[in-house]
Image (tube, rainbow, N blue to C red; front, side):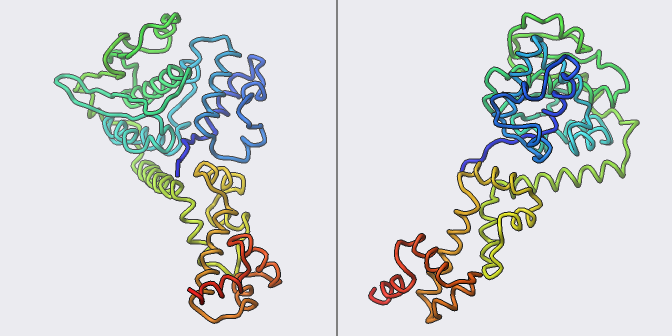
Length: 336
């Protein structure tokens, strides 16, 4: 099943907050996404397509071609969740970049961070893994600004010894780069990367909090494992429903079991091209057919096992699943 890229809703909330002073309303930013301000309060994540639409709306409404640099300037490492907290509490600069390399999927799964050491340079190379359409350069600018924040937080000063290499042509607003970045910038390069003197690679982080680092690292690890579980959410729900046949969990109860809102559960299953009702039907159809094939249990008793208060409702459900009644199904199995 296909899995859609999702991003924290907080990034959109930052854009909405910062552009409110310019007279741009949340409704204007959310136009064409299917999202509402209420949904932003209820859900933790949005799809990559929804996020791209919001960013493009923001660029159009603000009339600011350098919107990626502006939004990136608001991205303090802490807005990057546990990844940001782990980075700014890492023992050294290279440890901080390693956090982005290992856990970027949690917050920005469309980008890879690759640290390299080549001769006299410590290189942080960025690779975009998804089609970001016209928002491509906006995402790049924002993520580079975030990296600059992290590097300078640990160095305790502007990263003037660094060099920024862009694998694109210089934009019409190139002067804005000089306003936002604190190092020389080179365009039309073979790679997208920040180069630092290798001597800075293991710069100790004077602000590192060992206890906070460990907590944030554990949160990163848990979030990463949760992300992997989300990819197989349908399978997890199938197993949960199979283990609770007589309880017959509702959508709301199942969402609570997986620490999700019903709306989020519906959306994530839709991303996997399935639904709660379909999974539930699959579970009950498999279990019911198995009972009917392998035991002499009565159909009325079977309806109780499956949590149906009225056997007639169970018979109707079964016919919807298989096109025949439970008794007809059992008779067919006996003949074969």
